[in-house]
Image 1 (cartoon, rainbow, N blue to C red):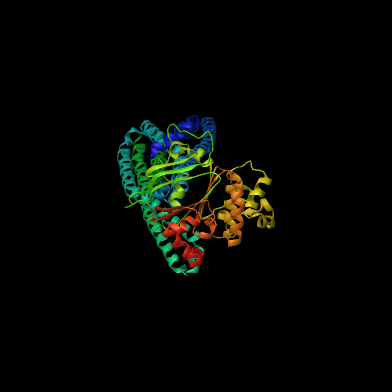
Image 2 (image 1 turned 90 degrees about the horizontal axis):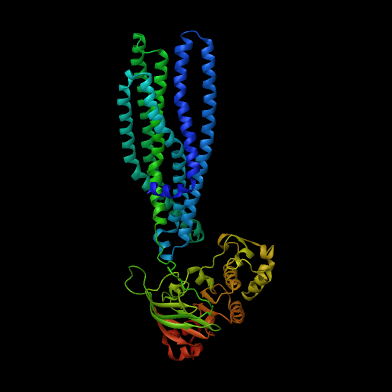
Length: 577
């Protein structure tokens, strides 16, 4: 997974990577050549007392060191640029894919998990990539080059390499086998702690109202303890790894000095060569330790890449058709023909055999008991879900044959939970039509009965709005959401029980102004209150997912028992008489 992901997203950075590899190769070759020069100084300068040779060779070593240092700085800079750029590209790809997800796809992953995948998981990949672009290039060159140079300086001591390198390799393999499952588990536990924290932040008022602070603290402590325990297990393994590697390194150095000293005393190896050999041994083992440092990051990066790939490989359940047919005329006509919808794995449909037409210039209302399928019906129009059977058409074309953006452009949607984005009143109102003028914004606010309170806010249209609209009341949030839909001027307005926080007088004024402003569009209102929809041109009554009746208020009172029961329960027997 990791290799495939990096191959795809590193392709645009091929030139930078080529330059980076060139710099790292030059840096490593310079580092490998320095011990050889040091051996020459000892053998030909120090022992012979040749000061001129010492100074001239020392100057070469100094220049080479400066060049190596400069190469290292530039290489780290480009490695960071490539790693951060690739990370940004992956993050953008995940964001774009999630934007195309249907509600079913979102529920499959969960909000908390998607946030973790697009932040923490990609950070792990970035960190690994930055380390790999430097250390993983240097390590093999230094290891192979060090072995060659060590054999050149003292072939007699090469047996030591046949012992040290396999031992280190075997130990690294054991560490990898132990930590990969732990890192996979750790990312899942990060998902869990994000989910708990997100629930506690968004539901803080409910938690306090029901005095659940202690139980929620216990729930968070449990998720936190699970993540901590997993992280501690991983860190214990790595805490053991470094000392073991250092022991192997130091024992190898002692062995080189011990056996090399005997060769020097016998006269079969110059002292300078022994010094160089010792340096090469250290470079070889250090290159292995560099590989270990990357190996420490590899399991977590691999686990993170697998989770990111799961998002990128997910084909949205709802997607654009291969050959879309977009409407040339926005008629505003919405038609349901024998439509049924079932959630995956459900025993029976949520809505079943729905057939009706919503026409422009008319207000259509949908009412029914809790769980009767009102919101599900509304969600089928903008294609948040696809009908299991039957056809939903907007502007005389099946919604499944249209591009989703073209479909959404013709619809103004106000959901049950009115949501505002951080910014200003104006930026929220222009969300569907960025080129709307201030005059159009004020007109929409007037229709939505929001002009007065916006005018009183500091800054008016430029008044700040917090994320989610938490700095305004529920009724104000609903009216601003309605104004946002009005600014868009779509062919179809969908209002999903978004008048619930309004008092009766405001509700009546808003509906009257809305009917006049939307006379060229289809207006669909889902409501629980009869008073909100009793003056609609067409009322569709849902009962257990089926249409129990269609008509005006008076017609339904006379011939639809479920509607009459709703009216009586809300307005009393007198209203149904």
